[in-house]
Length: 300
Ligand code: NDP
Image 1 (cartoon, rainbow, N blue to C red):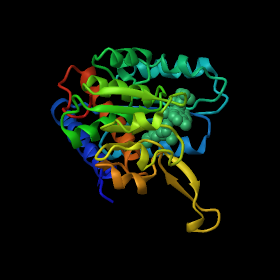
Image 2: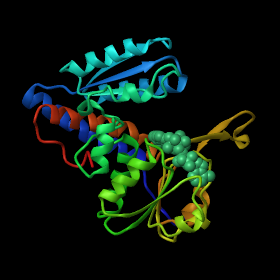
Image 3: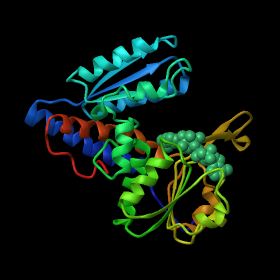
Image 4: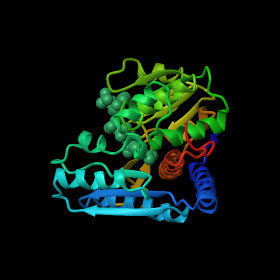
């Protein structure tokens, strides 16, 4: 393996440590405790695990965690009422509504009912517009985590060629906007892109957010490029025993790491950064709500 490993687990721990320092500062100097409200509708097992982890890490950095678990048949009106209450609650600085929502709920309507200043997921249409126009916004957590790791590795990203594979609203598009705001030259590739392999091979920075196990291999990667693998795919692992599964990214790590200059692993790369950035966004939202200086290095 020639590539330098970008250790997202260690990086996330350092972000959480910085968040904890700011949380302490807010408590000691201003008697303010940042609060994060997480709303979970239904009993999706994966969502329950995420929400549990979020709550645990929120408390570990010294913030207040407010969990709202609602039954799967919750009406849109009841969910909107809860969000309205959280919007008005001064102890709540961040609100996250765990996705996906049950089919009978209009996801766009719910997300856009969250006060933009408390939208720590960065999915509200106002935050999308602010990011797209290079203004101060709440930034989606997964792309923010990728940006932090890229800035840490490269220093300035200005003038670098970046290819983002994937154009989802939660990863691909905000990632592309963040890279553009940092003066990269950005290409967004997707399922209809022609000559995708050749395009990827031009990238100094290649971000894979596709959801296809190990789709991108060494042949797609320019020598020395930085590869950020957002994908989380569960595939059979017969080598571990019958019926066993393992997590892999969208990048074939073994071959890619012979060519890349630096690469994130899966697991242990982008994944741990997502919750760390959620905590960072909450402390940022809390500072903004109280007209206090924002912590440096914890946002775009
Ligand atoms: P989506 O399914 O919403 O988007 C996938 C994107 O990949 C689409 O834009 C799609 O193109 C594109 N795509 C699909 N197949 C191909 C292909 N063969 N060639 C090129 N492009 C293709 O996924 P998400 O953005 O939500 O997530 C992407 C991955 O990141 C998933 O594995 C997900 O689990 C993971 N993830 C990880 C997170 C973390 O914390 N680490 C957080 C969020 C996601 P088109 O638009 O044309 O259909």
